Structure formats: C-alpha cells, structure tokens
Length: 209
Image 1 (cartoon, rainbow, N blue to C red):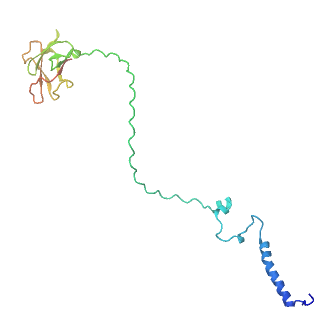
Image 2: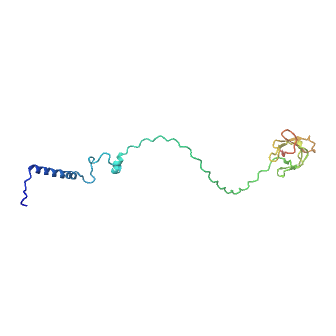
C-alpha cells in the first residue's frame, strides 16, 4: 500500500469526465423532460400519416366527411332473367247455390205456331200451338193442318229454318200458299238446300202472328 502513489488528476481529465457525465445523463433528462401528460399529445409529437380514423374522436371523424355528392346516372339494365317454373294449378271453386225460379213470362200473342221435326215429320209439342197435324207427301213438301177457324188465305204466315235442329244449316223454308197439292185449308211449306233443291233434312218453324 505504501508503494502506491496517488496523483492529483489534471484539469484536462476533470473536464473530460464532467463532459462525459453530462452527455450520458442529458439524453435521459431530455427524454423525461419532453414527455407530456396522458392524452395530451400535440401535433408536433405526431408523425405525419401515422394516425388512422380509429385514433380520432367522433367529432373529428364527422368533420372529415364532406357534403353528399349528386346522384349518379342510372346503370344499364341487366339482362332479363330466366322464366320461373309455372305455378301449381288452383283448385276449382264450389258451385254456387241454384237461384230461385223466375216468374212465368206473359202468354205469347201469336195466334198459332209450330215447329216441325224433319227426322220424324211431327210437331215439337212444347213449341206448337193451334196446329193439329203435319204430313210430308213428297221430298221437301209439308202440309200443316191448323186448328178450326184459321184460314191460311186470310192470315200472314212466316216460315224459318230451325238451325238448332236441322243438319242442313244453309237451307231455307218457304211458304207456298196452296199450289203443292195439300188438302184444302192446310199451310204448305217447302224446304230447300243452298242450291234450291228440295230436301227432307231441314227442321223449321211456322208462325201465324
């Protein structure tokens, strides 16, 4: 121990050590002294472009939104879609109740009328009044006997084809007066086809107003 000799440090060494301590302690001091309180970071402490919208307050985010722009033009219509499958058939509805029978119509004013069935050479009873008999002495020639008191020469008579029964829809029925050889007092009718030929396939009506 006695062999070691202590020397006083030179002024240059002292200054160098002080400078080293200041340099080492200055960084820590600067970092600590520059820290700001919580939630008080300013613009100077933020690196440009480093913040996202999640780092901003709702007020700041709202301020970033501009006014709504004008509506864009409608887009081009898309192609027509494929036809869908047909729907199921609906169920038939139930029949409605039968309506009440209407009142009977007024009695007809015709003096006499008849419907002659060409297939049977008879009257259709439901459509005959004041006629008693009918015959067909030859092709397309009919003799109709009226009730007593009806004179064929003294009344107007109308004959018409019954298209609902006749198989010859283009024919005609003609009143011929008394030239066909029917008994006296009979109405005489001829039935002809579209060519004027006498035929037995035409049903007809005879009416005396």
